[in-house]
Amino acid sequence: MGIFVSDVGSLLAALGTTITMAVIAGIGSIVLGVVITAARISPIPVLRGAALVYVQFFVNVPLLVLLVVAVFALPDAGLMMPLTPTAVIVLTFYEAAYTAEAIRSGVNTVSAGQIEASRALGFTLLQTLRLVVVPQALRAAVQPIGNVMIALTMNTALAAAVGVVELTSSANKLNLVQAQPILIFSVTGAVYMALALAIGLGAGRIERRVAIKR
Amino acid sequence: MPDQDSSVGPSAMVEMRGVQKHFGEHHVLKDVDLSVARGEVVVVVGPSGSGKSTLCRCINRLETITSGTITVDGVPLPEEGKALAQLRAEVGMVFQSFNLFAHRTVLDNLTMAPIHVHGTSRAQAQTNARELLERVGISEKANQFPAQLSGGQQQRAAIARALAMRPKVMLFDEPTSALDPEMVSEVLDVMVTLAAEGLTMIVVTHEMGFARRAADRVVFMDDGYVVEQNTPAAFFDSPQSTRAQAFLSKILPR
Image (tube, rainbow over all chains, first blue to last red):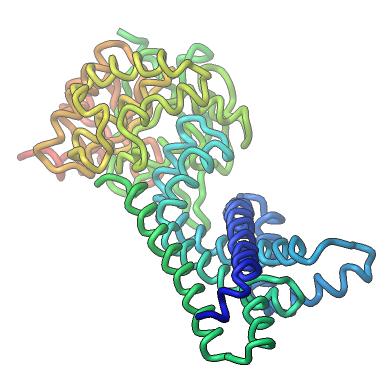
């Protein structure tokens, strides 16, 4: 274990980067996912079409390709940004497609009757979404969103491929010096597992707390 | 007693003229004329598929009509948008399946629309809501969630939710059809009281007892047409059309 102690500072910093990326991209993708879902179920055909194209695009293009394009092609087009924010933005846009699908599955649990009742009471479309549909859809989508968040956390490792110094990249650097791949990557993997477990438990907790009483 | 004349003119609360409604190939409402006066209780009866629910749902534009005109309190139904939402706020609706908001308490169900549509203060809305729950006899359920109530209690909560908006007219779309038989009367009792208090009501129902007790006028629909309308006594005791006679002979206890 001595090999980790010598580099503990940079490893912890790298873990911090991984967690920061996951948290910011996670929150961002949930917010963006709500907006995409709202467009997806809106009565305006153009919005519905745009949301569908968005989801299909990001679900069908590999994340690594998006990261490489963002990191190497955008600067060519004159858009300069530091590496980590670039990766966070790509992750946000990418995972938003998946959170949108998770939320849409939640929307389908809200009965059409409640939406009719909401219209009949005089709520506008936005009020119906905000007061009736979204709160119930998010409740039903907690566990699926939790799964997307776990996938997102794992996907932050891909940012190593474009030069972000996060946990995997940092472990890789350590291995170049120490040449103990089995130990180093087993421990790194265990840290990712711990993060996934924490997210899973958190999601389960939230799900029980917000469950609608029956 | 409200005006019994079916051509009450501009003072009518709800006025339908030449209303046609198609669902694709299916012609559901055929040239429907109906006027409902202020304070009048109109009960719409007829066989399944006769178009009575659709008629009810057209009045607050949950269904759009193919042609014809509908006015509520003299105002033609607006197209989509804010104006339509405003009109709906003045027209209460009670559904067969209650449709309470499952994620909110009963009290919240009653206060949401007054707060967010009328801009009533939360405190005022809650005071009004508690009074209404008292009126429909479920004040002890204020802090429970819809799924914790029986069907009859849920429907009474749904009636109170609609009343919380102080509507000019209330639409009831088969309000007791989804209820267990022993819960029908608790809902009908509330409706009878509302009718006696002078609320303008349009009620689609199979409850002929309610029609006799509370209606000012019974409207009989069949196959998309308004076939016959009359006072409950006249309609039930001496129906004019053969279709109404056939309908009544099937449903009235013999």
